Amino acid sequence: MSRIGKQPITIPEKVDVKIDGTTLRVKGPQGELTWIIPPAVTVEQKDKKINVLLSGNDRASFGMARARIANLVNGVVSGFTKDLEIHGLGFKAALQGQKLVLNLGYSHPVEYALPAGVKAIIDKKATKITISGIDKDAVGETAAQIRSLRKPEPYKGKGIRYAGERVHRKAGKTAAGAGK
Image 1 (cartoon, rainbow, N blue to C red):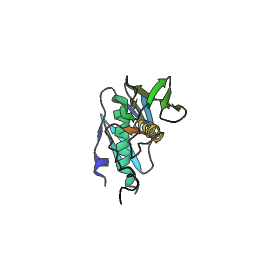
Image 2 (tube, rainbow, N blue to C red; image 1 turned 90 degrees about the vertical axis):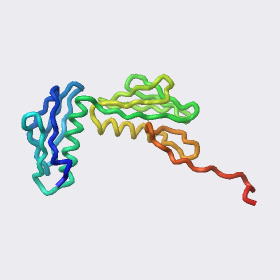
Image 3 (cartoon, rainbow, N blue to C red; image 1 turned 180 degrees about the vertical axis):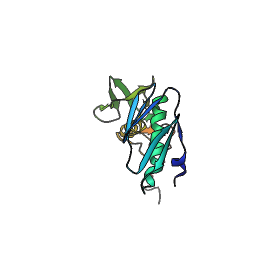
Image 4 (cartoon, one colour; image 1 turned 60 degrees about the vertical axis):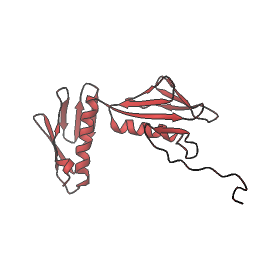
């Protein structure tokens, strides 16, 4: 039995939770999220707590279901953010409406359309991007897709990386004839 799955989820004051059969709706000050409950678990609400119970034999989705519901509740209360850093000479980002325009050393600027419910904030130097939203999956997926447009390379470290990410650097080639 999952130790995480057994823990009840406390519902904050400003959050409204409704369970309609296999659909869970969580509404809070930031917005509203829905999630389809997997058939292996049962979700019940008592007072200001949500309990997840194992109804089938699938123990893997027991702890996952509890974590997903906790992320829904946290998302509608405070939201989630991911920070990205752009490293490289001339590499920068700009925001045009719901479109992120990135200059990443290619012959053309790269445009990335932000999905609904996800916002981007760019700092004054245009080298740091903050992705935010209420859905943890959408924020993480958007940050990963933006990072994949130009992953950090190991020789000079140029590219897009998560804030605080350490890039393993490699030594370059040695000069010809240096080994003789």
